[in-house]
Amino acid sequence: MSADPVRWLWAAAVVAVWLILTGWIIWRARRRPETGGEGGNLLIAVASQTGFGDELAEVARRMLAEAGQSARVAALSELEAADLIAARRVLFIASTTGEGDAPDSAARFVRRTMAAGVDLSGVSYGLLSLGDRSYRDFCGFGRALDGWLKGAGAVALFETVEVDNGDASAIRRWQGELAALTGGVATAEWTAPDHAPWRLVERCLLNPGSPGEAAWHLGFEPPAAGLDWQAGDIVELVGPSTDDGLALREYSVASLPSDGRVELLVRRMHRPDGTPGLVSGWLTGPLKVGDAVPMRLRVNAAFRAPPSSTPMILIGNGTGLAGLRSHLKARASEPGSAQTWLMFGERTAEHDAFHDAELQGWLASGALTRLDRTFSRDPGDGRYVQALITENADTVRDWIGRGAALYICGSLEGMAGGVHVALEDVLGTTALRDLVETGRYRRDVY
Image (cartoon, rainbow, N blue to C red; front, side, top):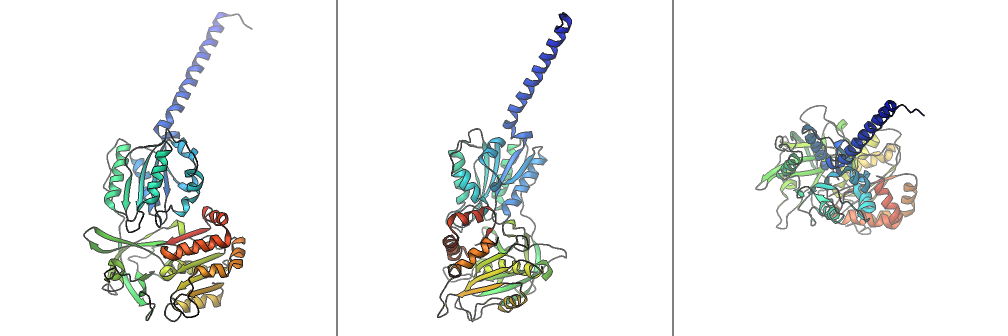
């Protein structure tokens, strides 16, 4: 060991510099979470049912980037409490489906994280809650998420913004909160995406003489060539204006781009006083063939198809055949696709066997492996579609055991709940829960 004092002084200086540098690194690391997690990132957690929440998450990410704040978008289903704690600042975009329920994609987070005792003190959050006041429990999941966050010790950055059916003014308020969060000013006011004019080229009554409400097949010609979508996607259209603003409605697309047009199945609804529903009545009545309707296509990742090698069980009722029909068309266009089974329910075989010739053609070609239907108003039948699940329990279990995915489309009231209960009885609660959480059980219900 050297006794040279100069060398000792140099060694001491090096150690001192190292200690200062180490302390600075630790100080920086401790400050990072206060600015939004690693690298200053905000976390945008999205739980979307029909794709609108995903669109808004991307808009928020771009807006924050323009203000110099980096952010990453993640599906709520991919996150756990540790991710929220690490991020420190989280923006939630949460849709409500059905009567106050979480989107199917968020089921895993609800069960594993929200049901657990979690300490989120030190986490701050903003919440955009998407809902529809026509349903009983408006923004039910958003409100449940807000209550859980507060109960776990998280602190709200601003008051929750609730959005009724895509209301642009509420989304602009959310945009203003994001601008204030970054210390900037709001960019251009939020405007809903453009709706281009699609021309009605066909309207055909599907169920003349039916004891139920009239159901119509509608075809719309696109405003330009090259528009693209996939089976499971949604069209958003603008109906007649009201005192409350634009009447936006969503419909499952029943066709593919190869058909050259968007096709819909629309049932004419009636209000309690007997007058036709605002949009369904207009689409199936005063609107004339040749008239233009403002529309746009929207990705609905939650209802897009699995790989063609995956067997599919399609279950639906009424105009829910629309969302299932697009999947059947896709299967028919891909030779060698896995087996596909359709279970469908309506009122009468004589009047309500929608698109029967087409379904029979797919059966003959092998594009559709099996077709089972129920007709609730027919003598000798009287069953709803969920009865088919119970009656074919062993076959359903066999298909699921071979990796089949379940796709449900149609009415929320009655059908969706009945189908879910029947599947729980046949498959077991735990097995059905696992199908939901792994994306093998998907729903487009309304």
